[in-house]
Length: 482
Image (cartoon, rainbow, N blue to C red; front, side, top):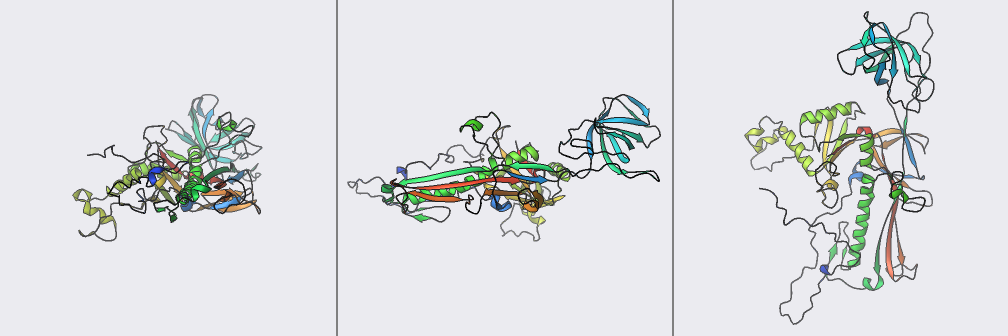
């Protein structure tokens, strides 16, 4: 058996720029002796239609008075290079000169200027062949920072045997100096990475003429935020507000920066649209990506844990998932029950109490621990068929199954405050000053509905916000997508 495609769910927008005649009684044929019975109140067949709540759960909002938001994130504390080689073939050599071919960060991290290797004379290093099968330990005897090379003397008697084409990984594990010698030569500068984002302006508007405002509807309407009444324009105004609230969040999730020479960058004169770095874009660029839809076994999660070990090792994480991902986690955890094959009633043996046959059986899990704590939460945005829900699962379709977000906050250097500050990993910065707050602006123009500031025979409700999302420590996030 399977769910039939027809009849299906409606995707046709109900929001139009004119009132819909299908929403109101238009049959006034008084010659018909059978008058219809009508329900005064419309039925909420799609339940709560809003999708915003994600950022309110995991983030915070704070003001910013600049058109550019910048912050610094810590770099690695220890030094490791994974692309080193010698210039000649070596056979049982006691010493060797190695080239560092890794892309060096241009902003600090070196001994004598930007981009220099962070290796100094007297430090002890370990070499491991990238192809496997060999590892050596040595002491650094000379460093050429201009050419990114260093010379080592090996501790083992037979030295090292390697081809010039062989690649080596090297990391520093300490240092050693002879008696009566000078101290370490040179010092290392802290290696911060600077990130930035720009806010975007989000707008919406609802307009209704003064004449239409005087028309009383026949159906009582209601919206998700509790607004109700018999005036059709009131419903449309509130739905515009709800739709704008959703866009404030989804824009922060989906925004991308406009690339140079793109059509968006040249749409408005010489300035153009600049875009912004949304959460999905940032995690794709600087975070971790699971490219197979979603993990379904403990071995898959072990791979995720292994990657998190190499990142910030945040103890608690929340996975915001779509319905299929949520079920796959439930099935994976239920399958760990040694008695699950004997019947569904044994699924509850994970809990504190045994299931009784009269009890409602809970087949879902809210979280588990596997190296780290993982909590599971459904994300309506990924399930809603008018948004990302229902997208094809083929590669490149944009289907996202979930997002792993580290819990808690992190310490960053705030360029505006000029000091370290605690910030949630995800938070929104909106433009504001002492005289202008652009977090959520709304104003009414026209000459109807209480407005008396123009000769327009209508009421226009305007909405505006200027904001950007800051994804701190994106290396601790995981995006699950096809």
